[in-house]
Length: 367
Ligand code: BG6
Image (cartoon, rainbow, N blue to C red; front, side, top):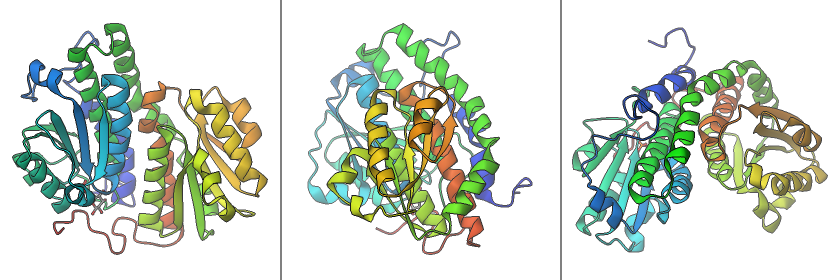
């Protein structure tokens, strides 16, 4: 059932192109100019009435929600807050009838997320669930459901479910943008066309798995490392760091690249690996100067950058891994893939149980 792969996690990483295609299938109009989400029951009037969005989730799904915040805010121009589900309920969130609460859960059974959903409904908000399991508790109790069509995810560490959640956030934002008029048809078509290229672009990253295995093996001998990134690269850094910690037990921290000097720059010493995401053209120069700060302290920097920008980046990093060019807003759907593979190969190099890491369950049904 692992279809020739050594672990479910590796199989699921390789299933991401298919998960992207399946999650988009039937949801993009034939002319490529709009998104159709026929399963949504919300009306145009309701969409126009949304004043804010709360995204609530746990673990990896929370990290998808952090990307979702930037995506919804930039494409649909609705203010978004993203919260960890176990915190949400206890901070008296300001939930009003014009708040759309989006809960994100691969399993649809996470108790903390379910409790947040109930709290939102009690306060009169409408709840939209993004889940991978159609008949789950969260799917049943939500007002609307958008299913990620990632297929069953067996490995405890989430990969294809996370990336499919990103695809759903893109689709939902474009759907809202159509009603709200925040993007014109040409802009929507451009994003949708770029999304259609993602599956093949992921495939081209997967073809370089052995390069990432070598990088992972060199990282695996270090006790601690850092992930840095700016803008939408930062939540991807958080996810890369979580994935590595979850299955390899190597300590790491994710920092917004510009914040390191306001915090723990002192921990960057000779030889400390730093994985720097540098995919945002607008922030390119700033991130490169942050890379120079860590290099000056002896860090060994792996850059995750864009094809076409190698020359400038190569001057600043020790090793560069380039992802195919896409629109800046879509880069998380690609840049997380090398990080997943690095985590996988680091765990493997250290002889850990990749699919069943210690102290972690696939779905946690206690609060
Ligand atoms: C944790 C899992 O318990 O729950 C993580 O170990 C997962 O892998 C998190 O990201 C959230 O799970 P779900 O099913 O709500 O997305």
